[in-house]
Length: 322
Image (cartoon, rainbow, N blue to C red; front, side, top):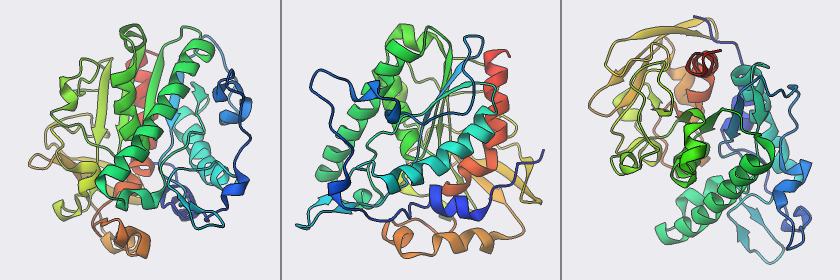
């Protein structure tokens, strides 16, 4: 099965977090205390897909795409200020997901949330958790607004990549039982499910390609040396998004006219991708930002979105029965 081509410029812009630093004076306008920031059309990606009650929804949470901002006093903001440059970085991924995941088959909703920046992952644990708590609250508020004012009772798929995958798990823990019962499936792409996560009634790891109400989780690497602890350590489950098996049965897919083989390593619960050009992928991790974040050279985290996007689209349709 052939994956649609995406230029490496999109990988760099949308997935490798190289958006330019910006001044805090460019913050978006503040809303009054009586208004939800999610009431504004500008709080949401402007989808080109016509919306219909005959379709299910796709609620998408974007990955980390911005660098920290610094004001004239040297104070650093470890959450996106949603400046024009921030939005351009987010839009690149939003557009890719709309084209490859949604493909006009779903009503597409994606919030411009105040995500944590790439540098924040290097903060001390306590400071990082404070930033992350604020981000999680922001996305939960966006989801609550979507459910009350935009969803109109429809079934929906919940999808997030990387930081978005982390937040998918937060939303599963946050949502009501009624909201959960209308969820087709949750896709925590490029993020783990831990034993602690599975204690929540809304987090049921997928075991095949047709169940509903389940959570799909996987991380890719060239070898087990490519396990990135931040997103993959402690995983108790993994599903292969090409053949939808949870054992080590291999599957093949094509990316950029090259055939790849992917299978699950049962010791680490990560996907191992065999390719004829491993150095092509390793070179993208060989940059200062990724070295500072301790991303292993054999990690394929940034291709989890690119390798499997069409498979995810088809799977949402299959799980929803359309």
